[in-house]
Image 1 (tube, helix red, strand yellow):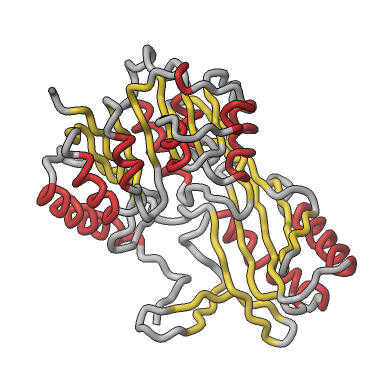
Image 2 (tube, rainbow, N blue to C red; image 1 turned 135 degrees about the horizontal axis):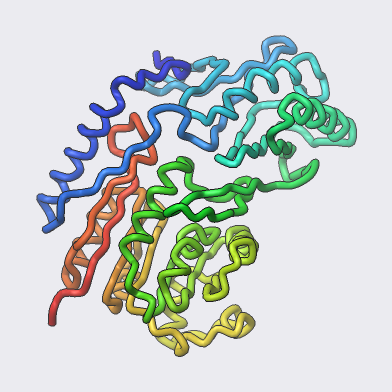
Length: 378
């Protein structure tokens, strides 16, 4: 049975070598790729977010995770989780102690989610199988007051969630600060929306893409699947203009805040899917979301495109769209779908840079990949 409280950091380098060498061999078997650059993770306390199930032993709160390592689902109880950030580990025992014995906070309490930042903020979401009422709000406010007193150097917030309920005691976001080539970028990250789990590796990813897109200030960049502007904002100094798209309304709203916080003036982020953008670019459909944001696609002259798609990878129409661009920057969280997409992209483009970013240490195959492709000579 797996012990989630123990993390043998002495095995990290060996596991990373095994993982990257195996994947490198798979890529080299299919494509002409350069030797990959490999970016390591911190071996401990690298996850900025974590989720735990709750077990109530009488009125005592216990955290557990479901262990499926031997194909049997078992509860693995834990008081600490060394994979998670230091702040999560500091909060875990304090929250368990403060909630235990409190009938309003323990009644049908079944899960807790943590979202933390390098900048020292924490958003704690308590999930329930019941309707949350004024009595719960009062108890939760008292819990928040106690946590803020115990963690005066941190920004702490609490959210309550139940079926069709989301109760904010203050806010539903944190503000992260990422350092890229000695410059600090500030990002709003909203609860229950996508963010990179490993912040230090995210900094390395942003630095790698920023370094590899210098010298393109005479052209524009298109980014698809831009999320909260994570890459676009860090790349804004490398390009004349950037047009980015994202389908999640929450992420687009965060992106607008992040653009303003970082004083970026050459970036526009529009709520469109990759498929919708393709239709707009091909003039098959007109979208009010473009008109309302004063975006005329003919005003952009993009030689480069960046994509960071979900695990399913790119659909055929989006792959065909990417082939129009001289430079393709492809960030992938799934090597399997990346290899599948590259079979088509390498028909027209050569892989010129290749990198692995270990967002997910101690896993056998999960790793973030970065590939830069340039159009083949005509």
